[in-house]
Amino acid sequence: MENLGYATGKHLELAFNIEKFLIESRRRFRINYAALVASVCADMGFSAREFYLYTIPAFTAGFAPCYIDALGQSEGSLFPLRCERIDYCGPKARSWD
Image (cartoon, rainbow, N blue to C red; front, top):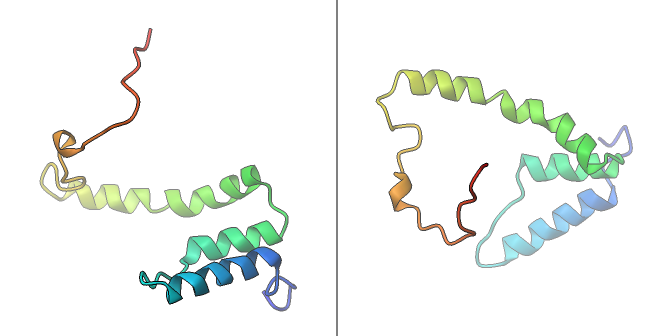
């Protein structure tokens, strides 16, 4: 990143400033890889759409291994929380005509 001039971009600096604030707060959170990639892509001038299209393969690549692993598990082990246990308070369900 230094060789390409992206080690000091304003979005990357903002991400690390947010991380500094979070580390010093009682939660002590650190930024993750996704925050780093998003800030560097913003510094490179990616639009929101370009960023989504660029990063979708990185996230979807993980779906197949999760599915393959779930095939060898008992039913209900992938998402073990039953729908009845979710206390949804959003808008009512819409009818699809």
